[in-house]
Length: 137
Image (cartoon, rainbow, N blue to C red):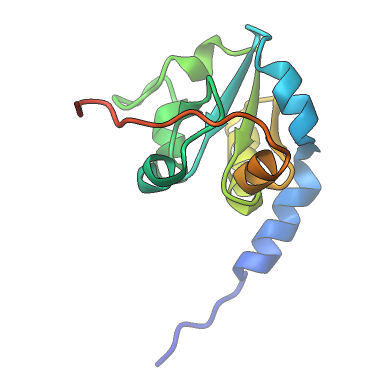
């Protein structure tokens, strides 16, 4: 018997988009030099290895986001506690909207996501850094 979905991904995404602010690729490009802003790539590691990442962005996959953000977690990443504001992005902006909404629900106030995601970043001609996972080569 199939599971009856009470809230599908489109409804959840629509709710998230209504709760979080979206910033342009140009805004993110300007924010890269601001030490108060932390840019976080929430894509899976294999996506970063394959296509690269925004220069200076930190990686915190959507699947581990709550653990990385919570200071009481053994998987906590200090960048979440140190940032005055966070800009999240993913491939095209769906996962980052959901992730930003999750962080807002956790208590983060200054969190936004990048419109169009990494795809829009590349299409705008911005630079891309290669990504090497920690612990490899």
